[in-house]
Length: 350
View: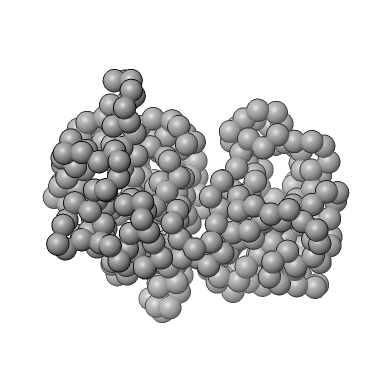
């Protein structure tokens, strides 16, 4: 599995999770190395991972396993290959389906190989949920917390074109913000208030934001799936959502983050006219939520992705230049515009 840390360092830890439950997951052997492209690694850079001094680890349902630290000099955006061997047939319950990086799968313990010939491929992360880079004391993390738009749906795979990746590029190019990393915690299909594509945002906030090391800011972009899913014909009335309910959830995110000294940048929801679920009702709900995000004063900062992405001639739909055709998910150009819209000066210490 190929990962791209957004900050450099010389000591790493790797995190695996069995958060979705099911049977215990046993990893018999694991390693991390610098990627040489495709399934190859740079010779001499492979480091065996251990867990409390042991080469293998069994992750119980709902649990997380973090490796012991390993030394490897790493520049920001230098790609790493994380390899694991599963000694037994293992059901895949905890995965990130839209990883947007090609994963290579072969039979047998090949964690020591410099390339995986004859591999099958997909673009998902399996059990791998983080790489922790031990950086300078002033370093910090910005969590991009959201749904498929944050996840990068609609962007070109293997290129790092999702807006959190491009925001990280901006931070590394600016000497004032080079100490900040960006962690993408977007889940396609995720909703604020209800489970479905993973746990609801309210339920996973502790795990995906508060429990991440060094978090200073979270950029919150969630809500369109709550609005649209409730509009699916035949959906039970229990799935309905109001602007007041979404606003109450946003207030919870803010309060919980502030308790941990984390600031929150609220992001407005982009338009979706043209989507088959779009209606005057869904549009009114979106506009009510966006008005609160812009004017409530509850957020520590606001980024207006709605204004960035909408068609100036028809504000209820995406700008055609940013629409890949589904009328919801911005394309590569739209994601670049989103990353450019974030005021990075807000992340600087007073």
